[in-house]
Image (cartoon, rainbow, N blue to C red; front, side, top):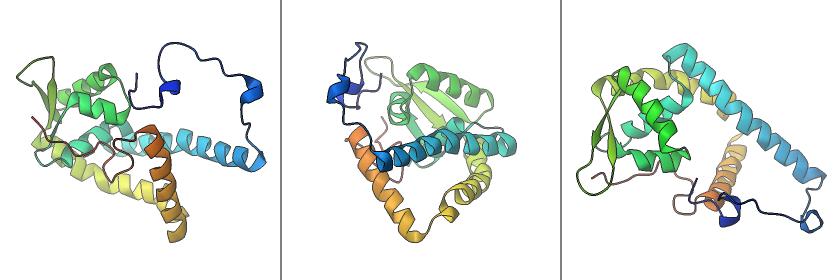
Length: 184
């Protein structure tokens, strides 16, 4: 369960919403929503296809490696990665196991109370990010950046800040979606 979504959107209990009380979307709102829904569905698929083809990595795996590469010591606590990627620790652990088997990262238990694990980018993993980044950036540029004017890009960033601020008020929208954390 993602902890930082508005309370009415998370949890195990179903919430009944009275259809008569819903502010239904007008034609312009629906068109915007359908456009966004298409982007949310198709951009990750397109980026994943490029990374699978060119780097033998999934988009999720690449983002884990990229997040680790941007940390000062190239490591993060697994629970922080999971929280900021909005995935379960189980899904992250499966991805980390695949990355570990390829020599791209290592995991180690963090001393102290609780079951805490740190993921650390290896030199081979760092080299993989450096090798994979040009293709990924070229795909991001082709799919999104070059399709927009500079004004549209500024608007897109503003939209991202507004929407992500509602979903994750503690982290919002930053240059690093995984945040910058002090590692223990």
